[in-house]
Image (cartoon, rainbow, N blue to C red; front, side, top):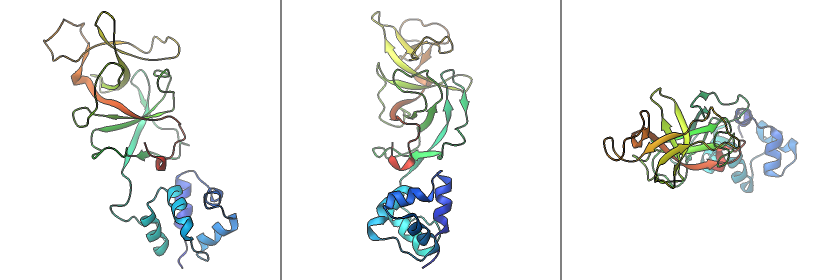
Length: 235
């Protein structure tokens, strides 16, 4: 039986340790070392928990164990989305935390195509009343996916500068449409913006710089509510 040093590498990439394998398989830590050395086989009832821990399909895990290196079986792996960075309420984008342990998440199971999906980590409290800081959001481009734009929806917006904002679409009692931040406390860095779903030239005149449907890059459809969520847990 080949050695399984690739498991050690996979664990390191995810920020996990051998003890995590022992806990997942409910075996003593020395038995994990035996698996890595190739002197103990992974048992049938251990395939699913080990595959889940390593972020592999059961088919890919079995193939990897057979050849002694990480090897994927085409068509069995869940699609994933890259986390594009930490997005703040002012539109600024920063790298993910170095100790996060992952850089992508599983694609939502109820979508047929990944193009037009955007995943970000919220860097601050600009949307805290709906989505707490550190959460992962996945937004769907309404031109490519069924993603309704209605009052209450949280939208991903393209700024003329190329930056992106996250705001909630609301309609006032007077019938005005706005894109608003949702901080726990007032913050002048988080601007509210006028909005219209009507094509340019239709409807009432709006202030210069108001946003329209052409600025909507995505509608937030899925949220990971814990910063430490792992790719294997899905979206």
